[in-house]
Length: 540
Image (cartoon, rainbow, N blue to C red):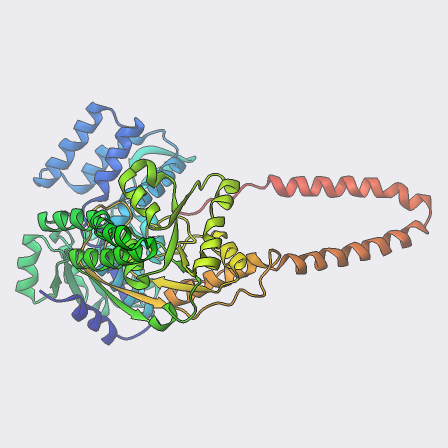
């Protein structure tokens, strides 16, 4: 078996530019398992499939697996039950499925391979027998522009119950790949193709660099016979019993670590020393049980300007362990109030450790709740740590930042220290209970001075800090909004101009004044027309 490092080295050795194609199968290659299973479950939940229709689909899939039915025939049976349904609803279903189920199945190693090809400027595509509703959200999140897949016929925005032929399977995949290569003047003899199944044997044999990822037994034998590099990833899919037990122990260690610190509190009366001991013990215990290692850049910034507000991007429940391992002592935090209801014991422990729980749906209550944190920073010298995204994301892509942490820093008069966590999702993606061993890369950025910030400028500062995270993660930066003061100045200038124009117009007499209402009415009609333009529909 090849290692992920060997596969990445092969990519690095390939020529740069779009004339090299890198094509990935989806199910079993990019994600663990099959997206069709998730889609069918959702169709049943929505009532789009009756029990008898579901059984008919299962029968078709069984016959396909036994070789008694072709892929196009199977798709024809499946798609007939979607007749008359709006296509737009399935774009929404696809987005929901990605967020709730599919995102956490993406292999971190496959993501790394995709990113390596993108960095070389290669033409990267997903080629799948699945529909765009299953594949497109993942492609967008992975930064992949080209999706080659099986399409269902749509007329007037509704499914007809037919499949667009040829379907993207077998020779259909080869034809689609050839068309993609021709579009960029590429040659598949120089291209890469990654797959997990002999269903893709024709395309594996067509490209110059076939790769077997998480191969079936049959593909494993074929890869061995042809000397194709093969790799198997254990970072997703069904966890082992050992991983499950260790995950339970790591989660429970939060409670046991704080229990171990209680004698310090009882004997010395110092709650602070007790919490610091427990927090550090939890960091070491949980990390060891998980198999978590950190590769830290800029570690000196963790200690140079305390007290401060530490901000981190939030991908995983493993972030709690990562932050504990980084910060060790004298910190307070913010958590959602739901934790106290859903996990009362954990909630009590976190509360004892200095976590303030807020109601995210009540802005006024949340602002009142954080005032003790400002006092803790001023009087006790403790730092505050929080995730400005407010909740975990399903991928490394940053979500919008909320302002709470920025207000705390301003009120306390302390700097902000950004902690950029690159790949915590490798340990435990959102929605997974089990922790998996991994090395997480962390970059601590230099402290950000907040001494000249104000309520008028805070929006621009929030975006500036978010862009620091984005630059570090290699993600697109967003435009920094103008400050409220600058915006007021811009609004005032046109007002003065309008006043001068009005005075000038007044000297022209009553006839000009009579024309004004008509012009205003025309402008109103034009504006109404512009608003009525339909939103362009995105291509599938």
